[in-house]
Length: 276
Ligand code: ATP
Ligand code: MG
Image (cartoon, rainbow, N blue to C red):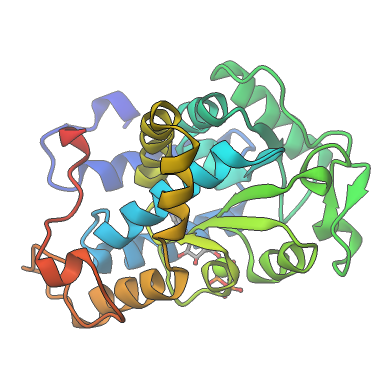
């Protein structure tokens, strides 16, 4: 079945499209087999989140957008799963916040970096970093720590969707402001992040772009307010509460996930992308 043959009215349409893209990514040498396993873990957490963007994840996406707009040198790190699942959305986000795109792989091979870079260019990326591989993240072995000197090594803000915990910690130790997108609030990577977006990257990336466009109009004051209003520990607690206390019939994020001002207590509905 090709992507266009998946019936749009299928109740698991988004999930089927995702699986198809990942499978195609493996067939095209973009996604690793390890990436398939990561996808399986991600799907189960997304199922538990109700396959929706929690209000706390939306606030994180907004803070992330503001952080990217205020950055001097933001870089979006792209691996084989991100390239397969959201190539157009990644290119659009890079344009909206004027960020570099760098291919950065846990299982690095020059061949796979090249394939991913070509794939992103096919989806409209102008410049894709990651091939120079002339920089490093200190504290990691060579294969896992290789980056571009004028890319991730020089960045002040990095977006690392689905990042491995060790690398997230090593980037943090370098003093980077880290934005992690990961559906598992217990994974080390979002727990290390300055801004953890606990959401499926398929929803999160375009959501950050939408917030960036709105905040670019609103100006630096509103951008700083979005960052100040965001509390990473509270967002992680709310996502964990949604998973642990949610029920498959529930429509809202449960209360009790930490401190709060939030949406949860107000019974705010999950973010509806179509309303934007
Ligand atoms: P660690 O605690 O060391 O960070 P991990 O649980 O993150 O380990 P990995 O398999 O290395 O394990 O990382 C994959 C991560 O990516 C998982 O946390 C998984 O939930 C997440 N993930 C997979 N697919 C998606 C997706 N489409 N959107 C967001 N997150 C995803
Ligand atoms: Mg992780």
